[in-house]
Length: 561
Image 1 (cartoon, rainbow, N blue to C red):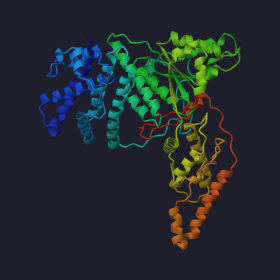
Image 2 (image 1 turned 60 degrees about the horizontal axis):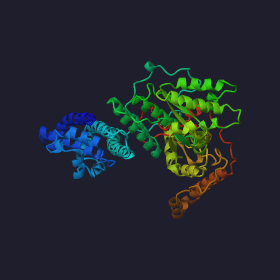
Image 3 (image 1 turned 180 degrees about the horizontal axis):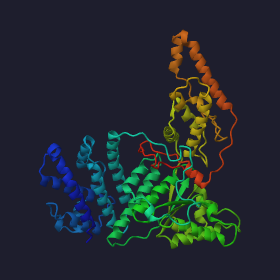
Image 4 (image 1 turned 90 degrees about the vertical axis):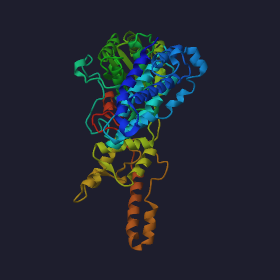
């Protein structure tokens, strides 16, 4: 009989009961005995809801339920068999209990909102232990169970985050590297030959903290959901392993697909930390590499370079950027040798290194097909979509804010028009585009304000529509698909109503029109050359509008696959 659920339930009750008792005098008006019973019922509702998530109600799940609550609730559950529980339909439909926050959780949230307590966060941590334990009761965790856990986590953390935002609203910070200087997001081939020393690393961070950082990234909703599912499955497998239960074999290697600048390096780094926190790997560092670091020009050297790269990634995560480039070349190209060596090492070191292969979708399909062993070793693909214009605006504002700039009145509409004019084709820069645009606007603004006498601080830090570069300066194929935003019609009406001001308003309108025509007629500049892997990591750009104020926090770090 599995006692894992009993332990999780006991921790929930023993931890939450004192917190609820603290509120009894002001809110609940109940005796300590009744309060403990309330918390016990809450644990029961959580347990049966997660058991019902996939509708299977297996013997292992029901035996664990009986062992956990048979002696805690005044019912006949202690004498019920799994068959009787299923026949009676005791758990049928209970999954609906997860659709909305419970009354108890709502009470804890309101208490936290009024004081300096963190009761709701404690509830969340203990409830997630019950959720993961239920999912670990069967040898194979179902997708429905993982989806239920993810839904519950998102719902509960949403309430907790609302409290924290109301208590201490913080301005978001720009992504790492947007301040100008180069900054790497992981180890590269120029780093030391071996992995970092364990004693030099900071303590492993809680998984909940890492997932919260993931949730703060701009966009990437589907990616976030996939990563949460990976984390949940790993936590379930860890629970089974700790209790000596069989853990189904599964590959942890991943394929990331998408255009550059969509946050693949950021997510890879967070995953590396999650793997460390869940003891999948011991160090959890991220090593970035590409073809240039894996393929040599002479016979016998390529395999050695691949082995050396895996050595640096030992007990961490290896991110192979543009992995599809290993497939390119003729019969004498050594890229195939690199692939063959990678296939061997991901198998030989499957308990020591997690490999993420990244690149464009179609090309990555060619990479997976290049060796029969790759498909089984990289079974999961996570696609990173392009950012839409609203998301790019958020990223731009975060970069600007991190560099002490802001957009002037009305400039955001023109900025959105500029972004809408950029073709969303293969190689679209995403976060890197937002950073390059910011740097171009800063240069334009400098040329504009340098001639102003007695310039104010506000003028020095304000970017206006006049500072927008030509729409094709970063991509010669960019074409305006709709007219650039004009002055508000209300201004025109005001000019018509006040003839004395008409001449002034008309001059301003002509100036804006001249600027738009000048932008359209400006010659196209060449596109940026492809950055190296290290340079791409410097272009960190995708951040969340809700990100905490620490400048070192990682928020959608821009990368170059």
